[in-house]
Length: 468
Image (tube, rainbow, N blue to C red):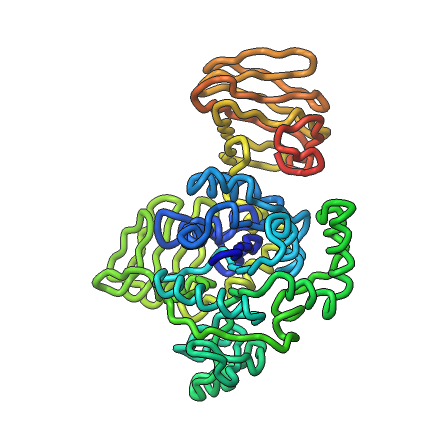
């Protein structure tokens, strides 16, 4: 794996796993099949082949602090390997962001691209295929990994296999869009079509040359990196996938048929199919009491879930939302998310508890003109110096000692002490101690959303962001 670098794409939203997956805590940051999140599982696999300085993770600005936190739990050297997109611009621009950092270390790199939210069951087989792909990429091939279909899946793109290049590798005959069911059944019977896994490996210099030839607008933006950071022009570049923009158009595309137990965990049916089942064929996760249930997924992160007489059902319960649907209807979950977005529902954006770089907050109750939160601030952490135009706040310390700035005053508050923060008053909360600080925040006003924040100073560089 000499000269091989990995770019991990961690910007997806995972709407088909609602209500567990939300905009601010998408599927790749969730622990769905063990103690580690899908992102952590992906990085752990890669670290068995590459050192941390050769691994870059590209994510959305909203997720960058949570991604860093999860990666530091694996290896502290990964903290500096996280790159953030100012806005979502699909996989090709995200890969180019990572390439910018790779070329700072190596002039002739081989680039491996991995989604952050896939499951791999056989890591030894995966590593073997990565070595084969790296060898092909060094010879100039643009390699993708094809998964042998075991059912007529209409949710994946397919790869048609051409002539054999060498043992275990074939030329790509064609990339095929997601088919209808009869076409997918035909692909399954023919045996020469594979699912497109979304994992790639290619020579870095050849890739940039392909971008220059096939996507001149993106290449022009790429060239601006010599004068200014790429993120400065990121919002104006085309939104295009690496599949459509490059892989489908190059003459040297190769496919390695892979058999390492791949699944993209794209919906709740996948979680059911891959999960450990009890004697009644049920997959149980969380505080669940099943009675006479069969062949169902019962998942709870929001208190006791009691289920009676269910068969072939999906039930997912969080603190603020519950999903109930037949297993064969899970594809319609994305329709639920679309309707909630049209209703401007916060159930799409965030859970009751929201992680922040300084800690977290939990919404305990809210009404038309008030909101009550429990705020937890980690030792040594601080919120931004900020003010609100439309709301006043009342803080009560329930644990630890808080340093509070209100206007031109700085005070220390211990447990059971409180402070009022009028509208338009600059304020800041800091934890100067060694244990977490927890406060109850009572907001009152005619507008209580998170974008009513004006920042004046922030240690996390979020001056222009509208999140607390």
